[in-house]
Image (spheres, rainbow, N blue to C red):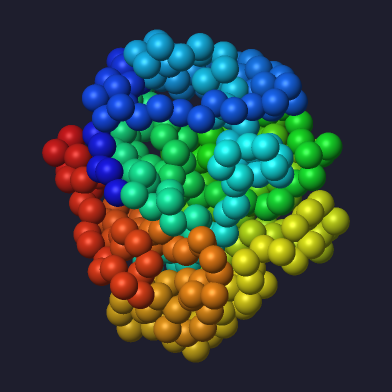
Length: 348
């Protein structure tokens, strides 16, 4: 996993990234059909309306590597949205992932397993951002510029999980990974993030987990046509919310097009929720790591799945801004502390 630091002007941050790509001789498979290109073009207009700064960052990359900005931005906006179900696309996208947050004994903890094809493991990145006129944050990503999860300086955690969407239901708008980036950079707390998210056009099905250091934790279940806030569940003196690769609310069952082909989502959800009744006490950071390792039930044990695994696993402490990350299958890799955001904020 690459650990990058980016700060200042968005365009120049893009130039820095593009220069790194050039030096590493990294090229991009911009294979798209007419539907994907048109979806990307319409989505870029929406992205620019809500988040023009990130468009400048994309342009900094495309200018530096000599790519057409419109095609490059379209490709980024099609990822995680309308690339997975077209056989001619290389690579075909598949995604798992489990994310949860809980508040207990005055602490708010977030955890995640990011489950993907293993070829994405070595190219994954943990990036510390300090943009002009925006929040400072860490974002973890199998892509770049956007991401699957993150934590910002205000103690707000934002994460996505993928939910299958039939091609004909996809609309122009933000894909889930750009939602994560937008909210990390712009929002200060869960309520602020909810307000901003409710105003966003969303391209395809996804779940967005929001948690802040005050203990306000929710999942917003999103489709291109509607959004629903799912509140945390109460257990004794704690409350928890979890999201996997399906919709949990009965109202949105009909929007989920995976039809159960979602890498044991129901079992992962059950294990997380039951663990908070039976195991999560005492040293809650260590117990959260045990949960993510699969010590309490199925979480990352994809041994019988060809070309699919947990490529990283994260635990965030939202008050202290301390992050613990296993860069690979957490059964095999140790969780290492990442205090870059904590140290940056402490220095002022």
